[in-house]
Length: 159
Image (cartoon, rainbow, N blue to C red; front, side):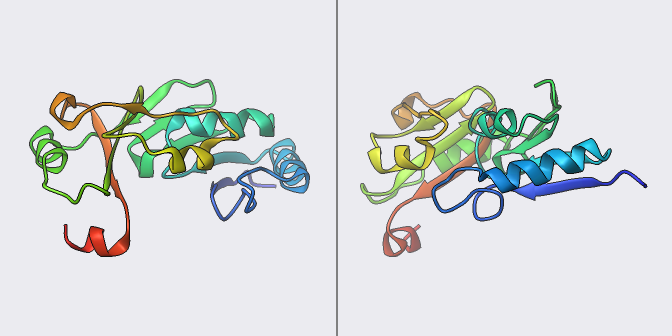
């Protein structure tokens, strides 16, 4: 048997609608690793948010997080990081936007949001990963792996 690299997304693929791994998913992935295959989990989620699922699987797996901005090995070592150009990140941080649109920055060490957004916490309830509120004028444009605007589609269309 030739070992294969199996890469899978989390949300809508490995995770159920309840944002959890089901027992059958865990069993299948554990068996594939026992057979000698390698596993990588890929997601737009932050690395710290993804580790919980890898740990629940109980197998070594690389984590490709933040839409590919960061890759960690199975022992949590940072393999690669790709950050936005600071000038571009600065422009995105300070882009005028409707007040109901939330600005999110993902960095290697955490998740920054420009204002409280309790509705976002339910998506991460199973992992305990939380954002930190940082006003845009205090956000550092260096070391940004991802900028994400969240809001009503009509409000986002204005951007």
